[in-house]
Image (spheres, helix red, strand yellow):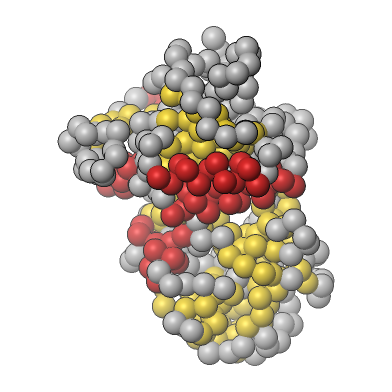
Length: 434
């Protein structure tokens, strides 16, 4: 079997819960399929989008009901990361995979109500070894042991491991390669794992990685809009989504964008820095800062970088999106860009020696072959919002532009993009809202 082939389950325990919910228990090689107990089992019901190196490949596009179901499942996932490991579309968008540590956890019962709400969407619940929080702890342990200046660490929930991309070529040479990390045991009432300090496997999948933050729309006025051009200390960034903290509306931007006071290109004050997670707490909360002191809009600039048209924003996604979910970004350099696809959530990335957690890895498909195109956001787009359509033409904000890593696959340059999730802001402020 080639590394890109999909592995079948060596065994599965199937429990029929609801009309479109199926359960399976995976082997260590990685759960990728499930079946119900009333029909003959086929070869594959839901094919995983990931190969053994963690690269995702999706075919087609999801229906509106599948997108809506994935958003509701992702919201539950964000609140139950101690018992869930992630949410992903099937490779062909024919259904949704939900990874859980314990199928008896009360939160799993919420899946049935979502399935009944979207009866045409098949939801496959797969039991895995480690929860999202356990994999996050493993990522933090890995970051402490690997000092590479550019490093990307992301969870692989279906195979119960951590994937690493680094600037040092440890993949071919084997030098300085960490093969596993131990994490504290997370004792829960229904925890499947009772072994003290579980040891999570680590796989280095790529070396010689390069990376940069996107730090580098025009004449915006109050109330200031997401995607607008902001400047400080001679550098250009973009304004992120609006949030409410302690009863006050503020705007987010990237923490790595310097300066305490930010201005438009025409010297109008956009506001002052309220607080920042970067660099000191980026490893805990992500790469963001809050700007306050002016009036702010919930809308976002769309179209080109010289356009004054806007989308209406109506809310925040404070968790991690389903793998395969589509995203758009908006920034002062590239304007609105769509066609990004979520590859992983709750990842960590180290750029210029600063590690930032709560990262969503996204890619931009270009053509039939290149799933990691490089025509994405660029310098100056840092801090701009990442968002998706709620199904009625209005936008939900899911994060803000962080940066890019790239490598060469033969003669072809390939890129991965990073968005700081709003889950880090929620972890810091708890009561953050729209």
